[in-house]
Image 1 (cartoon, rainbow, N blue to C red):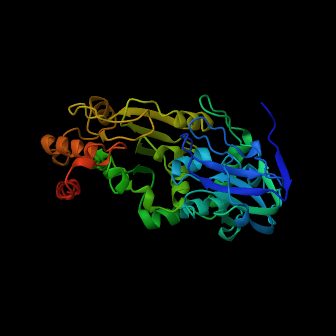
Image 2: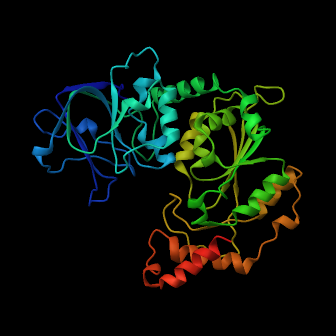
Image 3: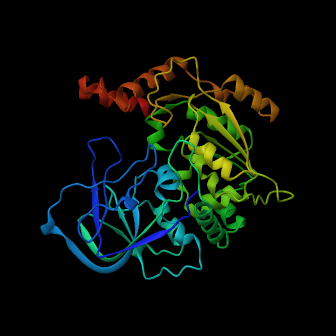
Length: 388
């Protein structure tokens, strides 16, 4: 495996993001002082391919005397931020490196990161003011381009520096976030279920989420919505909880923040992670992260409601729509953990659930071919029905 290095370029130019008609995540990157595309700024990620030259108007070139690290492309999605976008940030994982003179330059179709992304940077010692969005071609006095700290998919390998970066974030956050402070805000966190039932994006692609909430509540889990938590609170829970359950997708990728430091009764126990599968495809990125955090005891449980025909679209990336419910596998787990398998809160109207699922397919599928031909009055009524 090649050693990770950082290459330095003087008077180089960052070319902003531009949509790529070829189908990658976009064009853009770093040009040398002569305007030639620097291949080191291209991201070879498998599905996450990004970078490339395009013709641009030289008259709009902006010049800066600042020194920057090239972050690369930010795709506005928490899972992609963790597993795809942070590959060049490893130099900041070593607190022996004094990089305070450098800003972080990124390209994207979004002008800013999510708040939790800025919290991640802050845990690496990078203030928000040092992070800049490049929206016009900009020439800098110096641009440093770190090698990407993972290999392309499939069979992705993460360099130790990638893991060290996360470990520094974890240590920084836990030093300031005791378990007692999190429980003061959210209650006991020994057993937590991270729900998707309060996440609007999930409600536009999934049915049956509330019945899983009921199962977990009856199992003594504290039901929390991760999108409403700060990064610090989430990192704390992933380290202080003894057991975490969640629907497969982006949420379990946060297992990368676990350092096997469970402080539950007795202490030193491995985290038990229950991942509820809503589709047949394997979540390869999660498998890769679990290989890094080997101390986590993970169990996968199928929760696909097979009473409803599967209309999901995609190749394992969670495009949906998904039908979720109480299955034989889930009942077996419930019995093993003394969770009631029959309860009034588990009752669902199958007809209503099926209608909602089909509406999700027609209205919100990634290829909403039918929705384009439906009258707006119908779409308005359908969305109102789905919100019930």
